[in-house]
Image (tube, rainbow, N blue to C red; front, side, top):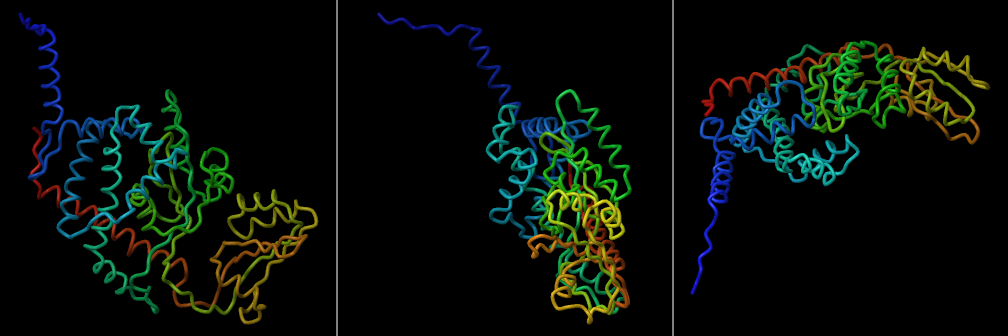
Length: 396
């Protein structure tokens, strides 16, 4: 005789409830034209923003972010823009590295918070695709804008913009979010390049704190996708908006800007400084952290034993071949150490140049900034706003 085991009613109720919850979780929440955003995507993106302590209402920001993502992806598809091999992994590696983690370690950190790795991947890939989309769509317009400037020697079309940044990363510990936000607000008020660097040495937890937060020349197009929009449009000395990152908040100050394809004319005069001192790594570190302009060297000259500071303004053609070669690769207020001597170190720093082309390096920086970064950012924002206006966005 066979007995059938009856399934308790409460078990059936639980199964039905789980099924309905799962169904509701993946139900459409927003429709963007013919594209769907699910409740689960919003929940995941919201949790991701909350984990990284993004400002604003996490759910609302997630809805807006995902809606924009759909519009950006559709625009990219129309132009045939695809994610380049390795690009996503590169962006994720940099993002995770900000928290001193590998990609897998950060993925595990997300998993513990109930966030899928695909949520992180989707968040990282769209800015990369969008940057390429905007560049492709407006490349000719940007080039035309630059070439129409009334300058004697045009900036080389197709060259790229490089930026010189100082970074500060403030750690954010659970329960101390308000203190971190307050510190960031105070730091963003700094309008001095030297003081911002001093603050980086004092407060930042980034590896660059040992050199006053100073980052070497970076190609703007190769910066992490989440950083590029913050840097584009900054004036010299201006501090960026805060960027929430794993375990902290980052801000950046624009110290300088240049066109990588630009070739400087042979200048008639160059003013430079030679600071010679007994080899000492501590002195090197202090110079790296505190010297922003040539005048800063005087305090080191007065306080360093057996040191000599010489400042010269000479014709370039009168320089020795070695010195001429070194100085030709330095921008104004940039320096390099010459450690060829076994006992003494020599710092060479360019203080200024004169009798150069009809527009100065500062003029060039301004041209680059206004005709490339600002123009591209403006076009990007307008383009996205037009996509929003033309789209049919329905909240379910």
